[in-house]
Image (cartoon, rainbow, N blue to C red; front, side):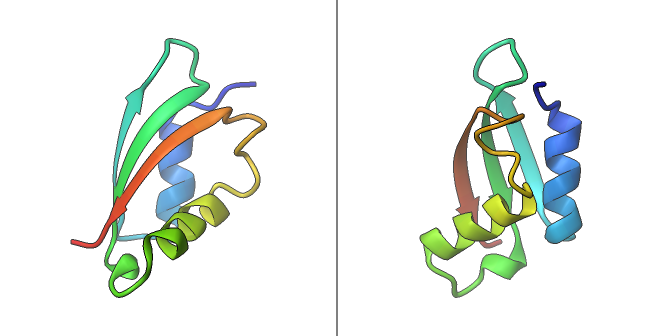
Length: 76
């Protein structure tokens, strides 16, 4: 079952409360998304660690309910 933008954003914000999440559908299937996540929690972290924090926030949904996520992360 696909994930809506609202579900993805709420999971990320639950883990990173100050996050600004911008989602763009890559297809009209709620299965392929592009996300830009900005959070002060990323300050001083490598890009890999930033992505790990977002992936952890999605609680194992990647590869299942959420088939594909093109991810960009940044500190404010």
